[in-house]
Amino acid sequence: MMELDTIFCGDALDVLRTLPDNFVHCCITSPPYYALRDYGVDGQIGREDTPAQYVARLTEVFSEVQRVLLPSGTLWLNIADTYCGTGSKGDHLDPKNPSGRNGQCVSLAQRVENVKAKDMILGTMASESVRRQSAYLKNGCNAYDKREPTSQPLSFWTEQDVLAYLKMTDIPYASVYGEIVEKSGKLATTGAKRTGCMFCMFGVHLEKQPNRFQRMALTHPKQYEFCIHKLDCGAVLDFLGVPYCPGGDSA
Image 1 (spheres, one colour):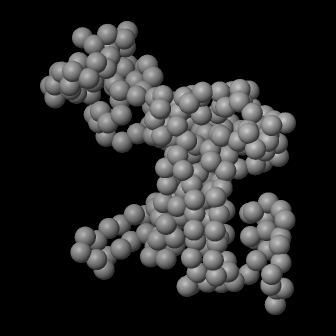
Image 2 (image 1 turned 90 degrees about the horizontal axis):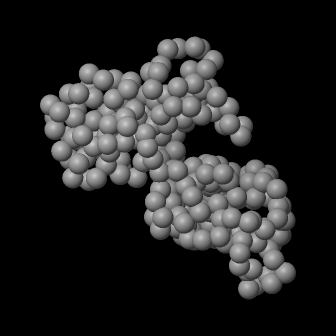
Image 3 (image 1 turned 45 degrees about the vertical axis):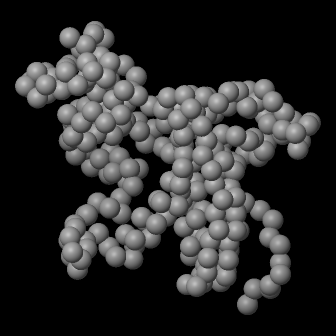
């Protein structure tokens, strides 16, 4: 039996792992927001290189919170958005710490890939990830006993799982993803990061050049011709002011 009314000091994840299952009635927390503070501690939450890494860290922590909470327990999570391009946070000292708790020279949120200035780069993704993970562990990959049955055989895999498996087995995959390499302890692709329907234009106006259609012109010229001219996607991209030719032009 653990002693009650005790304050544990340490890394949240490390301390949580020492607690037994179904032990805590309530958890109230406000983790550091992404890229807005530097507490001068190695491995601190909020100073990850990308929002995705930040979400992954929080998901790991809140998975442990879920484990230690009683079935009747509650979690109160206060977390807000970080805006892209809001300036160099390190230029301004924290009024609560005039000696300078902020150690960064340039805010990590100054530039984020595929996000334009003043866009929110994080909302409630951390809790959403935990809910999804919990649902898959509870219900499995297949859900036949519902109005619209589904089968999701890869739902319990993470992107890192998929990349590690491809690298381990040498299974052929689409060349558009490039090579699988290790960056900062994580596996990543040198080409496309995520793909869906190759003709989808959702978010294309936010992409840096060469965008998905400019790459398609080089890698899949027949599909590109069909998409731009037969499906008339070129007219839509012209209306959006998005270049789709390899040289940067729209026609």
